[in-house]
Length: 417
Image (cartoon, rainbow, N blue to C red; front, side, top):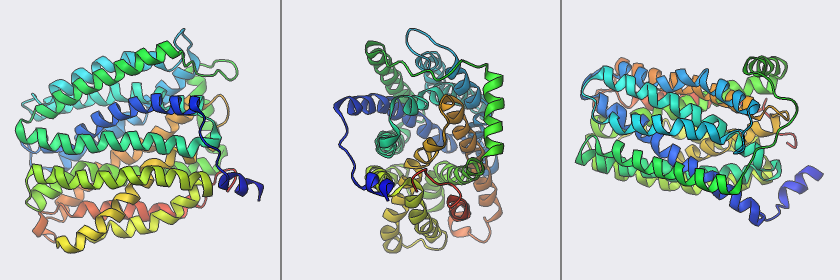
């Protein structure tokens, strides 16, 4: 009862907490911008060189392959080192130049092989930067406001995603290289501002216990996973959520343009409207999570979201789809906001970097499989779903993953649930 009352009586955020959350949100905006333009518009770029959706899925699925090991190493390593600027910031500084460079040249690639190589470099740099950065949240944000912290991050993430979806579509319609060059410049500026402000503030992350080697960290992580059923359930559930999101991001523009016959500009407008709903879902779901618990909110949202994803599989009529899209977008906002907040209470002290890597390991499994399975589904269902050239099959993959995760959520509980 006391725990429930604590959740219901939320204290206001302190000024320092607001400043920290605002500062931490800046890399989320820039990194979400870059990852979204790559995962969404590289498939459109690659489709100029191949008609195989399976190959496109494999290229984008490289994100998931790298997420299987780079985050674990980078996250655990960032637990161990220490500098005058803290443990996490040096990773962001080192990874930003190759990330920005790869993004800038991507639109100028004139072969499928060139695209694949540059995308691989981009994803590698992305994970070197992102995992130590995400570990700053449990380092610097109290568990009491973890839900609101993640909802704030999700707002920044939604803003970056929305800007990439809308701006990327408009710029891609002008020139295929334009969105990649423009957002590379934005990412460079955003990370530079974050670095300068962080150095001025000296936000050193806390050190808990003696430093361990990367090998020891990874060994400890697997020991934790083997001994905690909640972590194992979370691993699979989060992989399924990311599988759904990965499939959707990879093929949604191709579904709208190649499947439904709309222009890239129209696709940008449609996904932009959806992104606005995601922005609303982020703070709402965060506040609900602080009151009710993140797992409770997920149990409520997932059945509605999973069922809603099936509607575009069978329906193309705008007057039917338009009322459903907000529900789909809201559900997408929830699963973009709360999974990491669900993991924070399961983190032992001193293992923030390693378990942040664990989070991206689970992400990586889903992100690797989502584009690949969706690409295969599009190829297989080209005949039965000929009205959309098979692209509607991605909705089946997305829905099946979300619905399959529902039994697992009950096994992952916050301490106070």
